[in-house]
Image 1 (spheres, rainbow, N blue to C red):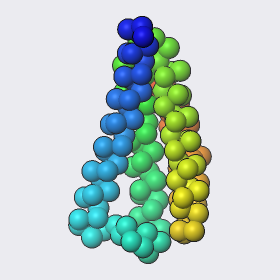
Image 2 (cartoon, helix red, strand yellow):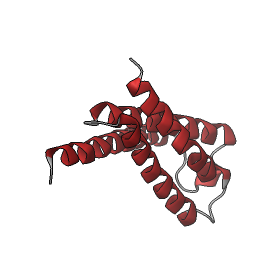
Image 3 (cartoon, rainbow, N blue to C red):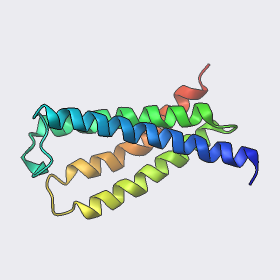
Image 4 (tube, rainbow, N blue to C red):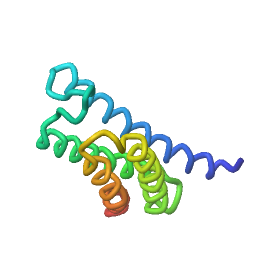
Length: 127
C-alpha cells in the first residue's frame, strides 16, 4: 500500500477516533453527574437532548477538521469521507434505536453530520 494511502486512512481514523473519544468522555461526565440518563434514554429532557446534539455536532466538526488537516492532499475530500462514514453509522444507529423515542434525536444527527463535515473541512483549508 502506498504511503499516501496509509496517510489518508490514518487521517480519517484519527478524526473519527477523536470525535468518538470526545463524545464518550462528555457522555460519561454527564452520566456520572446524573445529568444524563442512558436507561431509559427517553427520560432525558428535550433541552438536554438538544445539548447532546449540539456537542456531538461540534465534535464531528472538530474530527473532520482534524482529518482535513492531517490529510496528505484533498483535505475537503477527506473531511467529507469521514462525514459520509458518520452518516452511515448514524443511520445504523437510527435503525437500532427506532423504538426508543425521541426519533428526532438520531434524525437530527443524520441531518447535521455532512454540514459539520463540510465546515470542519472548510475550516482546515482556510489560511
